[in-house]
Amino acid sequence: MAVLLSVIIFLTGIALILLILIQRGRGGGLVGALGGGGTASPFGSRAGDTFTRYTIILALVWIALNMILTLTIQPGRVVRQAATEAPPAVPGGTEVPPGSTAPTAPIAPAPPAVNPGPESTTPR
Figure 1 (tube, rainbow, N blue to C red):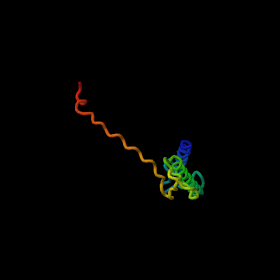
Figure 2 (cartoon, helix red, strand yellow):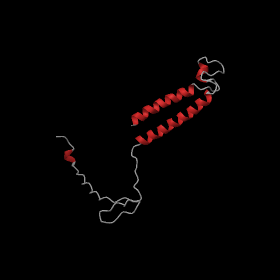
Figure 3 (cartoon, rainbow, N blue to C red):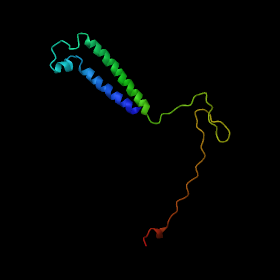
Figure 4 (cartoon, helix red, strand yellow):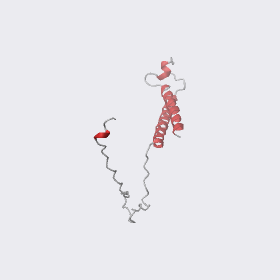
């Protein structure tokens, strides 16, 4: 799923870049850089409004796809319990108040480290 979304985001980004480059801005855009003829637009006189609209729509789609991808691959998403569910019971038969966690059994302490003594540190 994440790979498919990444490919779609990549293709949308390339289309967005090309769409921005063919627009006529103050400098004439890519059309002017490639020898476009003065004020005439190769796509018609109303093409600027149309390209602006398509650019905005494509940019919003690109942003939405990035947000979906982020939510899809986000590690460790926390799912909250519904308020109607009963809280988990503590091993003593009592219930845990909402917002707290059930206590766990105490962990046995580790055995003390054995001091090997001075004779085990010298090679024989």
